[in-house]
Image (tube, rainbow over all chains, first blue to last red; front, top):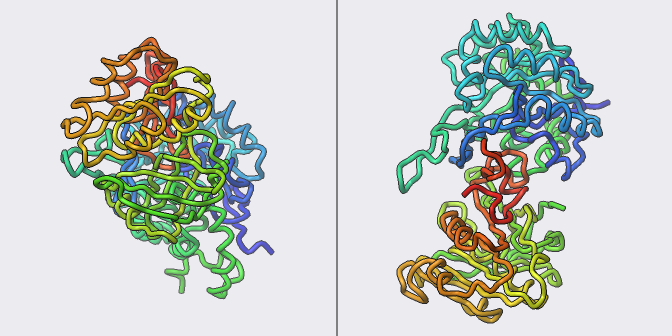
Length: 304
Length: 258
């Protein structure tokens, strides 16, 4: 028996571990270092309709137990991803979750319509929560009605299940979660990064050229756990959890909080082999906990 | 191939004010292809200082599986690295990036190696390799002040060496360009590494020469996946970005918009 298998809408996962969007490019760099077929899935970098150059540099800054980034969704655009990135990934036995971003509803719809036809794309992740772009991104993820309508519009054209990535930069994340569920979301991914900034010690000026950036890494894990704990109890769709996962124990925590699978982001920069390492370590964790199958852990923080 | 390895610290010493030389031994030394490639070091076992630090390779000894790195301890991360002692292990990812193309200068030709501050170290291995193949190397090395000058004797042993300091405490007072203005332009290739204003000045002064510049930018992953360390290129008017970590850090002069 595969003790780590997870079944989610559109996704038969060998294990619940996948690299998070934006932290793994389109897989080619890490694909040179290990066999990507080991992974549960891959959430590739956001794809927009047209190529995007992203934000000026500096785009990253380290913070205590975290990092800020403001890459700005740099990507080669829908055609580039369809022609050059997705076919390369076909050599691996791993489902792809395509992160879809846009500046207006029509962009999201067009990207979703086309990218969901790629043979190895098994699900979409709707990016309504990127904090680093001026138009689109987070503006779609902070208003429940807009989030619901966008989800419905994308669901109407997508050939594969649609997961919606939620922002923690809202007053009440539960409200947005319920809205995207009403819009027909098949699943939720959370959390995206928290807005933050860091100042240069000498000049007092922001280090990130975009002034603000998205905070990720172990520093945000408690926030992610709390939000997943809250949301997983009120929605009927599964959650893929993310936010500062560095090791197998963090995975156990996220599942306990209510996630069914997890995405590993910033940790890839700290240790490029972190995903296969966690996958290898998980069975021993299950033994320690006396659990036969990993799914038994989901939501145990609030289950009686 | 890029590998991750727990490398053995063979020695660590302060060679100038806050400038440290560390020798590391491990298998990844065999993977290094060219001077100017760099390594990505994890400075803390804990997650408090999360990101790896990119550090250039100053000297390579593939016979003894040993590299020398020279770095400035200026932030928490590099200060922490400077506390490591002989016998400790350091988590290293590398070799990363593309280095200086030594094949671009032929035996019997002259190369100018122009470095600024903590951009000087990779030029040392470059000079060793160029000199070994019969290239005459001229070194022009700029520093802020006498107390941060390092490897003067090592470079002198390889060829003509000019030291420049901003405050004039040693060598010529001024910038590398102050020396360059008085040097012959009878050379084949220049190679440069240092702060961007210096690279810009060098590129402008030797606009008609073949040159290679090594760039630096804040990095996330170090392998090309995160798109943090991009630079604008001169290729297209609407500015096209390429990555310093995996497309560089060394680029032919004129490729990057400085």
